[in-house]
Amino acid sequence: MNGSSASNKILLDGILAQATTFDSAEVALFPPAVYLQQVEQALTGTSIAWGTQNLSQFMHGAYTGEISAPMLNDFNCKHVLMGHSERRCLYAEIGLDQLVLDYIIAEKYSMAVQEGITPIICIGESPEEHAQGKTEEVVARLLNIVIAKNGIRSLSQAVLAYEPVWAIGTGKSATPEWAQDVHFFMRELLRKHDVEIAESTQILYGGSVKGDNAAPLFSMPDIDGGLVGGASLDANEFVAICQAAASN
Image (cartoon, rainbow, N blue to C red):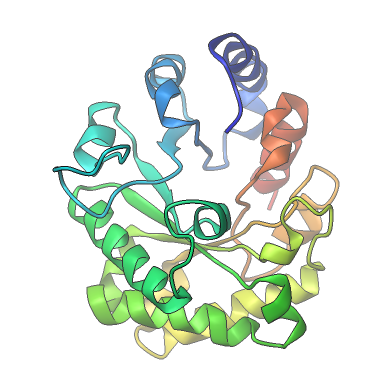
């Protein structure tokens, strides 16, 4: 929840001014939904796509405050985040069992795929789960629910993001080797269902990605890019990450 019309313009102008330095990378920006029109206008005709940070699992109805997939399509959104740890921990999802949340995320995923929007599914363990060695259990639980509900082939329309909650906003980043191990586990889980899907699915790393740690992370064989948080609020820092992606 950052930005204003004025600060968005400065950020967008700063990124676009350097876009030719990372034009071989696939890049998307995810503003708060109230700024989608501004971002659409700024990015139309460029190589940078846009999306938003959440959507409802419902098409329409009495769901005050929610945003539907058809609404996102009005702004030509190509991507949407779902299951982000802050959505899980802070808002509508509060108080729900994590397994129930996984089913809700699987329903949101279904809606996005149905409406032609690429879902970026955030998956990761809390500090407590990390300390208890439950990383693989947490990752597998959501992936298995999504696959059971939607089928493995639906992942051809999706992106996965490993988002270790213990690393978000803490300044701590998983080592490239740790992140690679988790990404490899995710890809192997997919491989048990479909080798082609396992090879083609993009798996991003999201946990305090910065300009100075992006290249080592992106050099890992199963890390296909980054889900960038706070560093995306600084044009030069974000561009440095995009450049690291373009060079890997």
